Length: 67
Picture 1 (cartoon, one colour):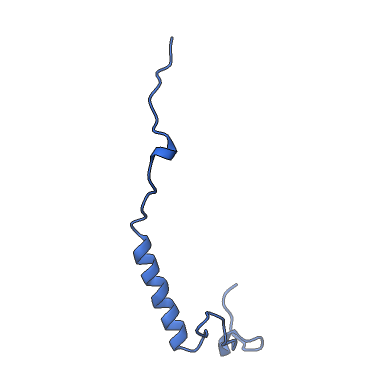
Picture 2 (cartoon, one colour):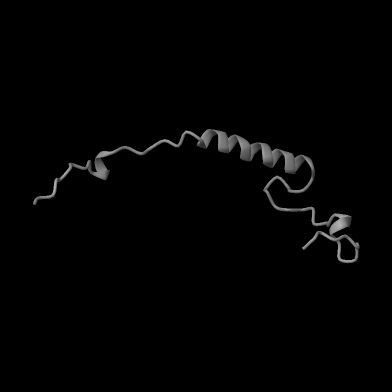
C-alpha cells in the first residue's frame, strides 16, 4: 500500500504575503497615540509623563473592587 505524494511549492518561489489588516492596525495605533498625546499622558516620543493615580485607586480610598 503506497502513500500519495502531493507537490508542495517551495517557500523561496513564493512571494511575501500581505496582511490585509495591517493598514487598519497602523491607523488605530496612530489614533491611540494622538489621543494619549492630546490628553498629556505621553510626550511626542511616546514616553509616559503622567503618573498620577485616580482617586478611587489610591491605597486608602476605601473602594472595594470585589477582588
